[in-house]
Amino acid sequence: MSESTASRRTFLAAPLAFQTVPSASAYTLPTKVLGRTGLKVTTVGFGTMITSDASVIERAVDLGITYFDTARTYQSGNCERMVGNALKAHRNKLILSTKSGKEDKDGALQDLETSLRALQTDHVDIWYIHAKSRAEQLTEGRLEAQRIAKQRGMIRFSGVSTHGGFPEIIPAAIKSGAIDVILTSYNFTMGASIDPLLEDAKKAGLGIVAMKVMAGGFRRVKPGDPLYKTFKKDGVFPAALRWAMRNPHIDTAIPSITDHDQLDENFRCMSAPFTSDDASLLAVQRTYIRPLYCHACGNCLGVCPKGLPIPDIMRHVMYAEGYGQYAMAREQYMELPEQVREIDCHDCRPCAVRCPNHLAVAARMMRARELFA
Image (cartoon, rainbow, N blue to C red):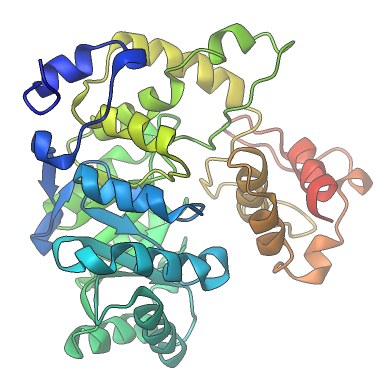
């Protein structure tokens, strides 16, 4: 059977070692409509935050993936330039989003103008207010920047992204009536804590994009670890992606993709169902990462007597250890106030913070100082 005539079912059933990911012409990829935007997106998109090889982005286009996400701050602005170069020949048939975390209206609009130049386009389809966790961060100034950008044709739709503030951000986004798309962390460690909020957002017509679907990306279990025999096997991270995609309220997921192997692995997930074997793999993975992975639930905020922003610091550690992006992680860590970076958890025993998700808070804070301070 030729590659062009092979059915999707036959392709996905074949052993991984013998699968060759075909070109986009072989079959139509599954898509969903992104809420009230009407934008049609493939159920797996492309998160470019740590991508350094433009050929991976170009091949994703060839495979038929339609949604690509970046941000002004990724790779100190170099990410947007790379994405712009990779996508410029295909811009009119793709969905493109970027983000700004600027605090004020004028700063945000200036960020957007810079983004458009770097991306070599006159508009983006979605412009996100970047990485917010509290309702009060959806300020009138930020929302006004999005309204102005829409009026000027610089963006088509507005959004907000959150790493862990979904209990506040999702209701606030719905209430505002101004947000079209929510980009939120969503993975197998969360489940019931966020699912009712996602249902509310869908009922309100918002599109929902999932990120951080790999729950920290802890891929490097070493020999000697009691779980090595399990995690040296393939399957954990495709299972995590399928878990996120199984939720009918998730329109698309944007896992970070760094190389062609990861692209192929994610591509194969697009029509593969979540299985009982996947569930078993993730149950073991959840046990492994429990002391390592911060859910960014916000329950620890204000608890540390020295004022450590634990979710932010844990995200930097995750980028270093889970994603293998030490330089980016240290750069973000060094943006923390100096008085925060000088706090040493060795000086404070016992730790006052008790994580409801069993994160080893003191140990992970000390790990952050080992890595970055």
